[in-house]
Image (tube, rainbow, N blue to C red; front, side, top):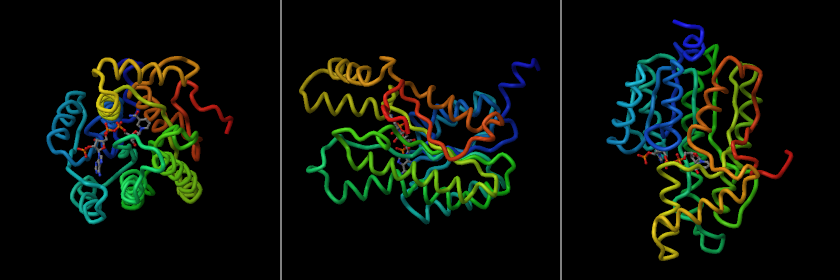
Length: 274
Ligand SMILES: NC(=O)c1ccc[n+]([C@@H]2O[C@H](COP(=O)([O-])OP(=O)(O)OC[C@H]3O[C@@H](n4cnc5c(N)ncnc54)[C@H](OP(=O)(O)O)[C@@H]3O)[C@@H](O)[C@H]2O)c1
């Protein structure tokens, strides 16, 4: 093995759970950590997407456990840990990635169900999974919790105030956990990305604009791309790999003195200095 290969496999021997690792950004994170040598655990509700992702991860030469889970169900999360994590017997890296927003909306159009739903999918999935993971993470010498938030949690836009509020709550909880888990050497950080051009959320956003504007997919995508580019000083659009590379860095030994931070992957979109 060359020196370069040795560095690339720096996560060998570690077990990483990526929630929502069957699609989108989560799948790219799972593949990236697998290429760095980690054993991978992924979950999601849809069994067929999980199996497809598992095959791709296996092709990287990594061990993979893929198990269906609806993380909005408390008993489901407990059962997942009993059936999947307990037999593995360790967990070193937890990436809380489940989340997102289904349809764009402004405050007056959001119902109580919209608010409760988005809190359940984004924040409460993180709460339930993290709680179950703690007894394993606190025994790991390499423990990391990496929470996938969003620039929406730092810089409110005109749309989706419920999404921004819940992502802000995730950033707050990351900081809070970094304080309580610091003495146990568990590093906790959040990542705030701007709109990412990938499969899931990007495609849903384009399709929603296509329907509301009565335009073609290509036209809706062109307008979305122009909007996202205009917000970023770099004038570029992020990819799932941009997020995944940061996750891999935060999971590595090189990031062992970093905890309680929220790092933006946004081409400069967030304007605040804090
Ligand atoms: N895409 C963006 O532009 C963007 C920007 C900033 C931040 N983010 C954040 O990045 C994360 C990933 O976003 P994404 O765009 O990659 O989302 P995505 O393509 O919709 O994928 C979400 C993943 O989570 C799973 N999932 C959803 N609900 C679940 C539940 N209740 N229980 C278990 N698994 C569940 C999905 O599988 P099933 O559907 O089969 O359950 C899928 O694997 C989210 O937290 C999002 O807020 C995304």
